Image (cartoon, rainbow, N blue to C red; front, side):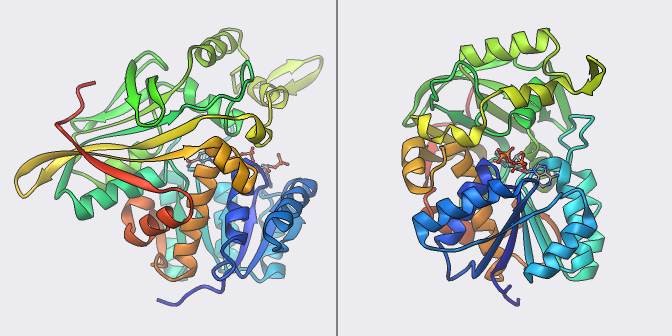
Length: 405
Ligand code: NDP
């Protein structure tokens, strides 16, 4: 498989992008030229300045509306990039995939497409591009963050090296960090609140099981963090996991939240502030959740304030040579260490670093099969090696038996 040139265009200049672009600049042998473009150029310039200070690498910046396909195509052509890394918002995924097809370059993102007016978290819109990317000889990699992303690669690695089949899988996402704010989300508030207020859904015995948001709570003792309450939620990788591991009997996703976070979300929901239905306020139409995002702290400003660790991973049970085994595979990441290295807290870091690693797998030719791929469909080994060398080391331990929560 041919390598790419390493000339990369990144779209979006938020918390995740800042971490990813820093790590790209720290790997100049892979990322030969970086162009960073977003809706507001000053955000790109601020990241470029920080990257220059930390690494000495100069990156190019530009202003673009990712919803404007012809403007993105023009930018791609002007930059000469052969890979677009989408670190903007899920609403822009399809427009950016269209632009990649039109300009003839490869694509990678960290979150599945969502229509603005409906919180859906479904892959079918992007899977529908499979034929067009394959026929154009181009690759699109979906969901190269931590979850989805690393947790999906963890499952594939377990199936490649430790288990013949996986029957039960739980993705456990713990942020044991504290930013000292009464209420702040650790990535884009609009997307975060859409996720946590959606009904919980998990896959069991061939069907989705739905329950009201935030009603199924379990205390779990996380390595390096301690005991935290985690809540059953729907998360997009459940759809790709159950599709690409058809033998899975049960797949669930859990995320930790403190009581203060839950109380704030409950009140905001009760008073209508998390709604995505437009309302007319003093003659102007606004979406309450978008207004809420405007008044909440910007996650990319939380780096300096956040202390503590994250622990994210999978517990998977399956068979190897006819015997049942359960493994827990996870990464522990320290908020303050991330800030010292790239100026971001661990949630941006744990998403931005896998985006860089996924892009590196494409540039070096490891993940360049034409078509549209979820992370579970790709060979995990090179990605897993880079996690260890690029700041997200992982551990795997065998447990006594399946989890009983
Ligand atoms: P931010 O809101 O901090 O950043 C998003 C960036 O996209 C902003 O710079 C914003 O511009 C830019 N943007 C928005 N709309 C447009 C547009 N129309 N044209 C150009 N640029 C635009 O988000 P995060 O950095 O927290 O998250 C980035 C992505 O990562 C999201 O899709 C999120 O869902 C995903 N994510 C994935 C995770 C995973 O593990 N897989 C975990 C966490 C996040 P402006 O600055 O002008 O507002």
